[in-house]
Length: 514
Image (cartoon, rainbow, N blue to C red; front, side):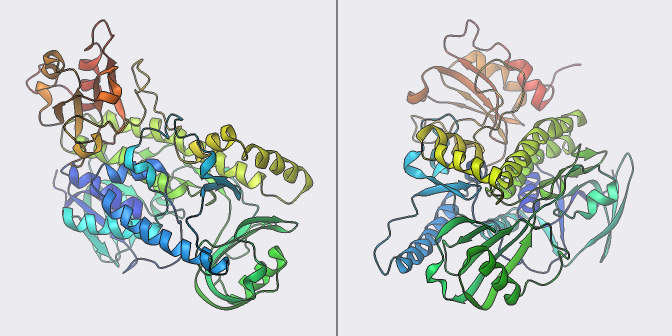
């Protein structure tokens, strides 16, 4: 078709940039439309979950993430040292929080499935959203993504063959349009996606401020009779959570006077805010579209689902959407897969989004200041003082439970593939940087490799050994890092189901007649 580009991505935040990079790896021509001329400095998420770290690790970005985290941890330790009167601080000693209930690192059982097999990605967590957006922007430049800043989508017309996108700078004709334009998505509204969910009941503020009189503020999260507040783990960072309903005007400027009044009210400490470096207001409305695709228009990230920020799951949920959609849409565009492959985007990602929404709702329930909710909070706090409880909460908040319902009986099928350490000195993630599928033959089986001969343009094949998983015979890894098929060495027929899995995800083999 006569298109200017294959895909227009509306929104140049982390999700839009991640999707654009994945599409480029798959050979698609992409234009990213971002209404802002430069990255917003407003404070946002400060951490990512392991699935996001895995996704970026699988694309070769681990060294950059590790360096950002090192710098962040240095700032955290400096803040804690200052709070401790100059005494040395070795680290935070926490892995996150549930409803402001801190989860201690020493109580996490790292042998838990999903926590034990992510490889070096498991060490990455404290990377802020702005850093993710910056790193992905640099990667998009390296891949030649067409990023058009200062360009706003104003409308579009979609038919069976193309989408004509109207912008503040003209018109772009594309094969597909993906809305990655946030919780107030213009694409979602114009396309008519249903967006059901629950209404908000809280008002939250997060800010980095200059303040005096903070000596009596407790570091970390604290529940009080009037709400919940957080202080740290970097200088001047404060969060307030109040249960008096949603803000009357979400677009009103966040002022120092308002922040000061709210922090005093929730904490009971007579602090003074002398200046505001960055501030944002959010609430807990939780909504999700019923389908992620309508014809040639798709949604990803906050455009498809919104929820409160508790647990730092929103950014990671969106990156998961981009990883899932990118290779599939690129394969359809490139003629390597039928359009029906896109139906699996909704069927796989919608349950994950619904699960995250419920986990954020549950945290709000455990933060309310009423007696019933505080009783619930005490029970959860007690559980968080146990290995079993902390491990469960950490694994779930960290995305360890993500599982797609894919054909096949093997326990790995539909799950993120373990970062296998191979005898040649490489790890699985080292072979996924190019965004292609991988058939890993662990027993030097020519029959396994023979089935992949018709997919050389879509699937890489590697023969290696993995001493830590001598039970595995072979693994078929999708471009997003999830296992499409696996077999054990004890299987009567190690190749059973492999041909079907290859065709299911990567189309008919080259030269086949149908």
